[in-house]
Image 1 (cartoon, rainbow over the protein chains, first blue to last red):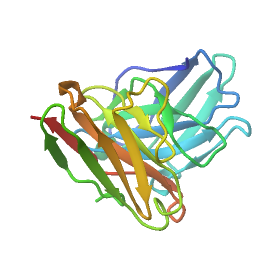
Image 2: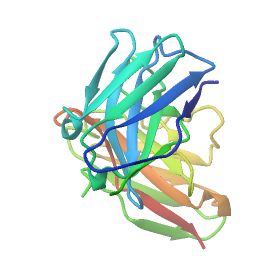
Image 3: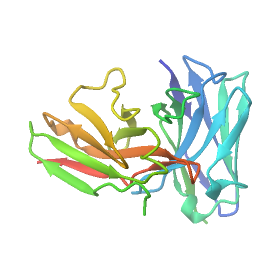
Image 4: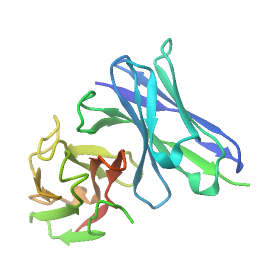
Length: 122
Length: 110
């Protein structure tokens, strides 16, 4: 059973960057696609992007392109999502989630991290 | 406004059956798999249905999914108090190149 464990809460000022980690146990990121989803307070879910482990690259939703980057540390089986130029409306819980059928086009997420609260405040 | 449209709320009595709709378009639901998630307060979402009507291991068969054209539905039978949650549909959109989520439907068990 894959478990995803994320880093803790962060408080950042507008314009700063934040890095959220997502560590896998029980599996590796070598073949498993990982998605990033965020949820603003009281709001719904918003997909940010996907990390393709085989080629080591990501694809992001257009509204985040240029501000988000996902990197991997294979030695610790950890992914990092960095969001820059933070705005107040980036305040949200950020989740990493495993693609159940990596390589398919079903985009179903069967294992989620516990979420990382990011608060943007001056 | 979400591109996938769900009713904001539904309610039904215990032991009854409820359905939650999710309306999209030809670029998302019309062409791609629909997934459903349950989110309890303060928790991460949980996959309930994938690829339109498949149940992940461990999910009760009280939950079922269906899809027709550009719409999908989640049905929950034998409602229980702990089914109270927010339910989201999702699907890939070929035009926007994103995974879309519906706005979520809050289920109240009366």
